[in-house]
Amino acid sequence: MATSSLPKLPLTSSSSSSISIKPPTNPSMLQLHTQKQEQEQGKSLIRRDLVLKGVSFSLLPLVLKSPPPSQAREVDVGSFLLPSPSDPSFVLFKATSKDTPALRAGNVAPYQFVLPPTWKQLRIANILSGNYCQPKCAEPWIEVKFEDEKQGKIQVVASPLIRLTNKPNATIEEIGSPDKLIASLGPFVTGNTLDPDELIDTSVEKVGDQTYYKYELETPYALTGTHNLAKATAKGNTVVLFVASANDKQWQTSQKTLQTIVDSFQV
Image 1 (cartoon, rainbow, N blue to C red):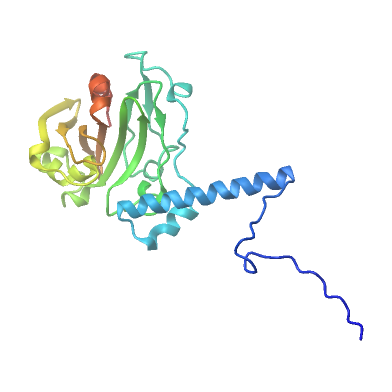
Image 2: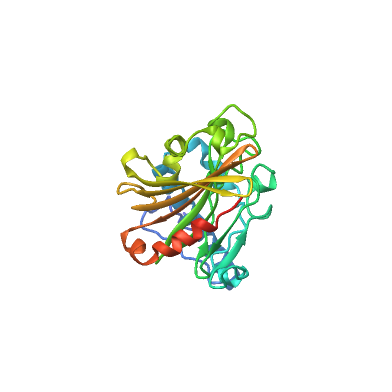
């Protein structure tokens, strides 16, 4: 008895675990295939970093689905920033509403600082940028971040004033002493914890009507680096903390450069 031949079905990954799917050979389809692979790899890296930082899995969709809010460009800042009028060997970064969600929301006063032209601006994950909670964030967030592998890294951290005092529009002096402030914000300098013995030097700087607290820390167990310089001030409803960090090797060659960067920070 003759039987009709059955059509041959294509094998799928469920039919054999040893079958691998070859990428498309068409140039346009190959490009889409590569882009998709890069996106998935990027998501995996974000998941890993957030898990290490203790971010809840329930917040992961906010990170993975939202585009980076920052206009960060991972190229030398000297290619798009102008030289500093005070020192042409540095370039001047002036934060505007195009740079961060908090600036767009009017929740942070504009700030500026200088950088060597070889540094690069880094992108910030949505969950760390405060984009999802503006204009009323309950916890500190990262505004901008820059890095040079040979010299160190800097970041601007903003904290809601209400987290430190119940007085609206309080000055940094009204919040408390330099020691009291760094005790509250220290973990945002080091990335984990701060021991009082790690605070090496403290000073107060007055620029016009704005007061700044300045710190030098030696932090052997910090996630940010073994050496940290910080500068903080309060304006409006926000305390802004500027942090420069370096490991031992970077500190040996770049201490003066990092100090110049921190000294230049103004709100």
